[in-house]
Amino acid sequence: MRIPASAPTAGGPAPTVQAGTGPAVIARRRIDPVELGLLVILAAISMWVVASDLVVAAAHHLVWTRTDGFFIVDQMQYLAWIQSAAQHGLISNLYVLRSSPADYFQPAIVVSAGLLKLGVAPWLTLMLWKPVAVASFFAAARAAAHHVFVRRVDRRAGLALALLFGSVSAVYGSLGIVGDMMPTWSSWGYPFGLIAVALIVFGLLRYDRARAAGRIAWAPGLLGALASSLHPWQGELMIIVVAAAELVRAPEILRGLRAADPGRSWWRWPADRRLALPLLTIALTLAPLVYYLALGHLDINWDMARQNSKHAFSFWAIAIGAAPLAVFAALGYRGRPADFLELSMRMWVPAALVIYVLSATALSATPLHAFNGITIPLALLAVKGVRQSGLARIPRGRLLAGAAVLLGTVPANVYAMAYAHNYTSPQANNANFIRPDEQRAIRYLADLREPGGVLSQFYLGDIVPGFTGRQVFVGDCLWTEPRCIPRSLAADRFFQGHMSPPAAQRFARQTGARFVLASCNAHVDLRHWLGSMIVDTRRFGCASVWELNLPAAPTGPFVSVRRHRHA
Image (cartoon, rainbow, N blue to C red; front, side, top):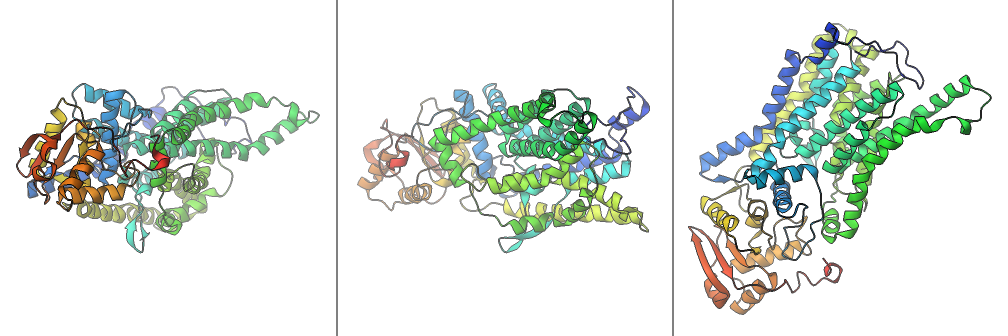
């Protein structure tokens, strides 16, 4: 068990007391009832969208497509990756009908692809990562709280805020939440982000232990590399945190060396041993990020997806959402950190801001992902700051602290759950719920042995790759490029009969699709428009599948943009 020193050393290891199997160690490892209750609450909230969707599907006699979150395109993107990895080992782009290289490796997707090949349903191979994400995030937050705090009440408060903190903010001019800053929101369909956060927390804990012992360790870098592979923003975060924390500690180390050997020049000190741990950790964590960078330059699909995933999001919306916790966390920056882990918690927030800015450049995308897991450092620093500032000693301090924790966790989660229920309700042209006849048509395409891509409207095109493993003409505007919106509008005109028969035949031929999937939305009977191009017709109530003559390679305006001709 680590006993905090009364005064931390400048650069060397902190004093430790080993008590191998003593009662203190056993008590520390055992989950107490409050911690178990927090885990149950986190797990229950993580299942809220699933439970809500099941109730809605039963009430409206619809088929739930097993999405787990606000944005169906993200969940279906994961399912499409799983289907592609099951076919090729690596991942290709299934949201276009042109040839796409299989060159993307993501370890969790590969595991899910293996389960898919063993017969597990596609949606279940993804949903199985939810308990892994919830349990690993809880374990990481708990381990960090136990490392930083000795008092049980501090550990409980820090853990509660790390797991459940949330705050409403002004989002695009109205009341809302910044989802990436709430672990509970991330548990709705984004397991890889939560797992990556847990990995870097465990990596920093192992780094702290190795640094205190003065030894080189592979574990921090390997954990960082896995985090980079799953969710690169967290790999970037670990690199910046480790580098910044070491730079902050460097003057203290140099002063200690100079005091020990005043006659030696600074460049003659044995820095290689001291630098080995950070350099090894950074190098291992960086390797997958170099792969991602190369992928964006060598694969035009990834280049266009990165450009499409850039979005503008007000910094003030983030600041307002974090403010209730950040105000108290600022108190935790006073004084010297007890050890490297506490220093790394101080570096986390500025590192996240750096990544937020970096992600808006051509090097990266999706800036909000920089704030995944930000509640862990903010919560630990806030509790430590309150304790150090003396606020905890005011009359009825414990009661007020409990009320503050409740205010920081309950209202935002209740708001998010109510908003999620309304947001995921059945809506026109949203395939979160589909009709039973549409499900039968998709199952037919999934079971059919004949290869070939699918022409459908955006409504069903979004889910076809994830449930059939087939490529589609349009479905996800991150990956359906070039000209995603014109593609979608052209598909609408095609299915609604707004093209002449020659134009409809030319359009169908140029897409390169072998199958035409018509949803239960209003559409014309395409037999008159397509004529002899149709070789087989399958009716599934209000949905239909037409098989066309063997198509040629896609041509025409949707693939003829010069910049994308080589894709």
